[in-house]
Image (cartoon, rainbow, N blue to C red):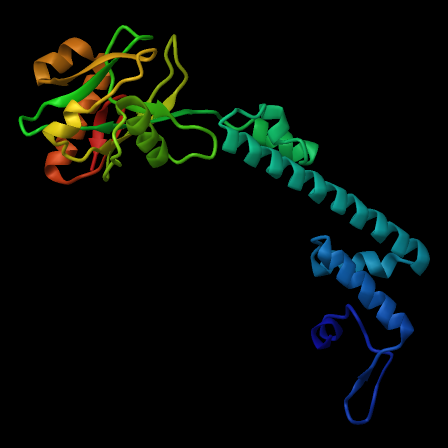
Length: 264
């Protein structure tokens, strides 16, 4: 109240000889308007202009009530959107993109929908005592891959890499530290993307023997020498895999662009 008085936003009806400020009904109604507009996110300078322009306090309160009801409805829709998103995530289903922005203002929804979209994927690189890298052979591509997955909505790259280890290898292990981040430019059959490669823990012979693949997605797996990596990986993936091996050996994390140009 003292600050509002200092900036001229809310003057008291009078000030006593003892310095006490006294507020009457008119000032209390003005204070109510100020607090309502603050709840709606207005700054004090704008609030001052608004309340100074008011002539009919009843009409002013009606407008504030409409704004509050509109805001309440917007928050109710936002809460519904969040609840629906939680349901989709728990069920493992994809929520339509337009539904994600349903409760937002058209301007905000248009802005978010227009943001650049990048594919994000994450994988884990397992290396054995002989320096061989574990690759899996997918049924849907003509080349081999590290165990990995596309990152889902609201999922971290680390969580996606851990999920892929469980789903593709059926191993109860988690990735280690980040080895490589690789930006991949768009191509004829792909959009641009960011690829995260994490260090895999050393697998015992028992763990390696227990690897179980989903047959509808993967034909097989193998420990691969560098020569076998050259035969089984596209050039940019080969560069990325070799960089990840170097990062693992040197205790670094590397940034790559299309598998090259690393910066420690």
